[in-house]
Image (tube, rainbow, N blue to C red):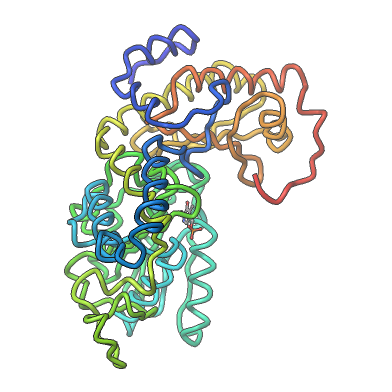
Length: 423
Ligand SMILES: *Cc1c(COP(=O)(O)O)cnc(C)c1O
């Protein structure tokens, strides 16, 4: 990619030429001078979601009452799952929406270990999301301590970690599970490479797509991935606590079983049989009643992503992260910042992490007085999340300008180094 001149004029030109620029108007932008760079933690509210939710509450719940189940609620997990499938390279009947990412991850870890009963190792990495590690630790305890978790060390910015992961897979490996895009560095695994290596060794792969879905194309089926989970409230803009999705490759529907058996995953749910008999296909990975209000809010948001197209979203994400890195090199590196994300765009997701010894206090100053909302990840990472549907190039330019000013004007010195619980 040619070097992008790191200037405000370039930002304006890139915005003027941006084929997705109109999508920003599809989102509620209550404070245009606030630069929002945390769409990878909580996506913005789509304008159409506001109207949809109002209708769900007032008409569907308020007027239709219990009849709502037969008028679209009951089929929503599969219907919305099919739309997510279109964004991650899966068949419509390989994904359902339910529960949280953490709970779905638990279901699939137990299911996968059950499908490889003679194997005892789980391979993961230290760039994985902590919740996933906690689930693995809990499952190992639950299953009597027969399994060992091998946490491969990665540096987060190049393929050495991926090579180490492959080297850790052997004939004792039951399951290989990583975040497709690492939540700190933004490193993206080569899914097809890892999946084919694991498959050749007889292990299953389970992908956490939370930081990938909606930020560009994912090719689950083409990569021969086995299992996956992911969030809908990050780049899919589904809203706080929106339910997650669960993917099981069709060939495994009868092989991997759901440990959280519930009536929504039962074959003939309304027979009220006292014996569990799993529903056919992906429906067996449902458990209890869906969080219907949150679930229905996800649908218009995914429609927006589908309208924009994943290839166009990814092309803009690449250009925007390149622009951000060019700005970092020109303006921030001389102030003591380091790039903590891959420089190779093919290995980088839609967020960029930059480090600074005073990262925590700089981040506080940005939020408190500079109208920039990034987020912070220990020990010194300021994460700048780019959501191509609504982040502009001028947003990115402004964020870097203000970051620079926090340091050159020594504004961060007014803040304590004490950590808050939530950023
Ligand atoms: C955000 C995120 C989660 C969140 O899981 P929840 O159960 O929805 O809280 C899980 N995994 C990854 C990689 C994430 O980025």
